Amino acid sequence: QNRYFFLILITLFCTLLTTLISVVHMFYISKYVSLRRLRNNLYYIVALNPVCSITCLFAMIMPRNLAFLQGVIVTYQMIALRISIDVLFNISGGRRLLSDQLKAVKEDIKCQAFPFCCFPCMPTAAPSVRNIRKLENVISQTCVIRVVLQVADVCVMRELGDTHNWWFVCSYAFSAITMMVALYISCVIANLNRDSANKFRYNYLFYMVNISQILYTSQRTVFTGIKYLLLGEERVSLIDYDYFEETYYLMFVYSVEVAAMSIMISIVMRPGVSYMFDSYSCRISSIQYSSFEKSIKADIESKKEKKKKGKGNKKSSESKSGKPSGSETVMESLVEKTEPKKKIPAAAEDDGNYENLASQSEQE
Image 1 (tube, rainbow, N blue to C red):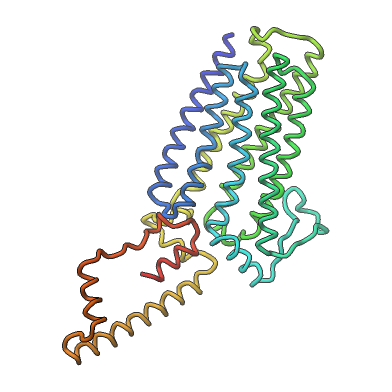
Image 2 (cartoon, rainbow, N blue to C red):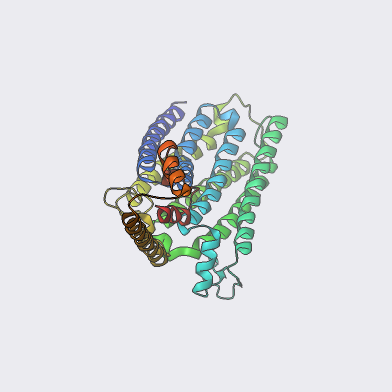
């Protein structure tokens, strides 16, 4: 019992450390990330490590609820993987703009991604919005499959009264296969805008989500397989804590790994080096660093020049006439005095991509 208590204490320390780091991350995101949708997505991804660590701590304190708590971890990880793809679309200006960029440089969707990096025979696809959405749907379907497996695990555990059964070994193995499919498709999507995403250090964020899933799923499968092989058909009472020995070691190891990942992601994704924090004092607007910088800047400058010329011509005509004449000009002046000015929504109220943020700056 003493060794289990010692493992719980270390896990508690790692959980507190991970939670504190996550709170600091959320503070910087709320203060220095201006786009609302990107900010909300980052909130969810940043909460991945503390949620997993807290769930591991609860699994060590309440080991008989292991199946349910494992379902919480796996479900959150799969949704975080799906949201990490949305972050890529946010920093790329949306799916359509990403597709247009790939078509402009004549680059196809390449299936030569991890773990098939060394296979040049992998097929390619046209960079259309429809194909990009198909890849997204594959990731979403794998999320649903893993959630269904977790629900089935909970039902089997409730019926049998323990986790010592061949069903859990097969379920964890199939869950690992679906995870690898989701990771492969996500790597294919992440490689579409690698040059622009590197400026935002998106690859580190993406790898953190992937490594978190790989570590937990692989270790869970190994620990469960070892337990099943060692015990064979032997039955142990759920009151005996030695029955959950692999749970304590699994959750302890994973909580330490999560704490280490939180520290590393804090270093590589700090606001001074990542363009996601576009409102940071040492950072110019993130639009400037996007792949469509030149076209946006040219459009904004040309429209501003046209507005200035139009205002100059209007002032010169009014100065010649002395006072504004006609019913339309009089009504316009009255409306301006009586009606409040319409406020243009700020960048924080944008729908989430840099393309719409650029259109707002054009209106100004």
